[in-house]
Image 1 (tube, each protein chain N blue to C red):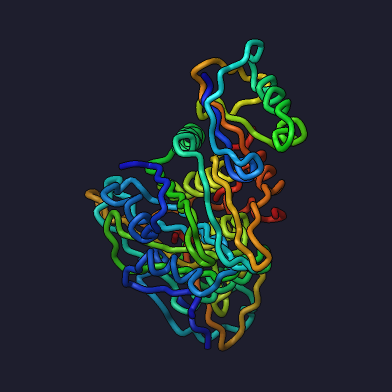
Image 2: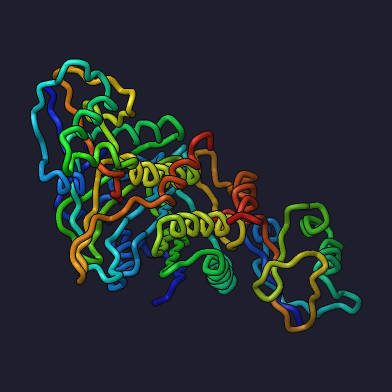
Length: 149
Length: 149
Length: 83
Length: 83
């Protein structure tokens, strides 16, 4: 099964979560994350990416997570195109024998995805369209994994 | 909606995850955890609990999580009775505006549930039935939240 | 009267899930109640010998110093293993 | 020949998503390529003025010292904001 998908289509959170442990009775722990478009005066959001590099960057992040923790299955789905408030943007799911590895890897993947995978968000507001600025807090979140665990 | 359920029945992971953000466009982040029965020479597992205290203990853990982080919705489902390898045992889901709060609260709730909620597991193996011993690593995991974040 | 509950391996060790106990004079804490139960001898000595046994008073975790009084619900059980 | 790609706000600033560039002599690194592009003037000066602009060579993040050679795919873009 493909670990990484970049797609316009929505995804089935339940099916993706269940697939992380289906048929694997060594998987005692599944941690997942879903990121959604928040309202906050936003009418819509458009996600652009760098086809080719995106998939490589995500696969590289998964590889790094596998080197740090004992993982069984990993799944990343990131949507691109135009999304509305409440729409799902990203799914990250990790299965492991033990919960700490699943939690840590899931958060690590999100932190690295936020700072290393070539996606860009443009918001449509009542005042017009604007590109979302990168946030320093995301750099800080990613940096704390360096030397950790 | 009830935040805490203790039940024999299985649950719908997808529906529970979706419900954490449905109709709330301020929810930008949903973190979930599913714990499952691992095989490892186990034929089945029976979960006993202390009705009344269990629900209070879980509600208290949710309350503590809400005091530590900015959370929107929280959901805990814990199954009791006889379960087979691969069966789901527990679901913890948290929604928040931001991912760090969702991740931290979800892991905190699991760590505290493991050490403070009155559930007991009995495994059925080929060599007979045995009560599962509490693990020191669970105490360590719960203790690290004291004074943290 | 005290409502006493025993769970999991302790329930099996004692062969009892619950009992109603007329609270004897001089028993005001969990520690004193444990000593009283241990004095029954046989499998009840687990209340003296087990260091890991936990207690709850009225469905909240309680240490040895926790007060017990008539009308309370007191539970004893091994360390929890849920999740 | 170099394949150049521009993304997001940079693409809009330049009014260009991609171009094929005959690599001028003396340009061996990302930093030199940036200086060359900035020398076009107008909106291209963003390559000199923007501190946050990122680069990738053959789809891997690259710093200013990273070598570039004919046949490479080089991309420039603002800091990423996915997730």
